[in-house]
Image 1 (cartoon, rainbow, N blue to C red):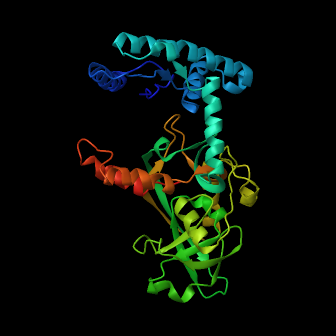
Image 2: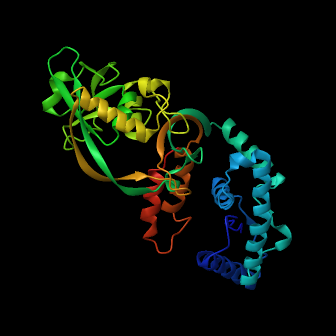
Image 3: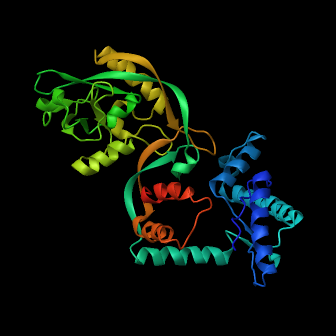
Length: 361
């Protein structure tokens, strides 16, 4: 058994004690049955999580990683690894974990790093790994992509802004409600539900994008919630996952308005260089001055935050590496359906199937 390697971000806690006790129980039980058991120990570098705890440590002295420079900061992280990696091993040994300590490994050992590269290349040649432009959850403070598990949603006391989008032919306007008015700078369409009779006559027409004046189409797509607001939504493919999927289906362009540090880029026109919060204030003020702001109301909702530093996560269009999950999930699902893998209690099969059948690349 390969130990789920504890992160070197700190000391072990009671959850590790439980988890490793269960593993030890399995290892000792099988040995008593005469089996030759290897329980393989090791620790995990934990990537950005370790970087963040080391940054918090140097922040106590009023410094950042940029003050130290790359080389000195990396040296500091290795010092942290030596201290806390050793402490974790001591704790596991004090628990009585019957690992083979002569085989201990660290996830950034040269041999393991080489194995990672080898597997990556093999999967690439098998067509399972590919590179694509995709909407990712981006932490502007950590400068890294986050998985869904690393960006939990937390409640915020936001606002809902109702904005006028005038029809180019002068026959009226559509009113869109949004919690992120600054993202309208990246809009490439507005959308209505195909079965919403209220807006059937305007599908295919053009509206003028508020503030920037760009002409964008009115499209129909079933992802629109007819019951929310006016039943008309702005489509910002580079900054919203639902809008990104809609744009892929309809062949709409995507306009990224953000730099990686969450300041607005040149595509934001006169708002370039502003932070997201500054741009929101300026956009709202300019909409009001132009008579395009219909109203603002309180709207508590949940938004993703980085679980490492609690920074507000920004959806960002980025070129990334992806793993195709469907061909990997299919045999894993079959293994459980055919009884080759069993869950205790069996009710957890439902959770497993829900996860595996909806898993994304």
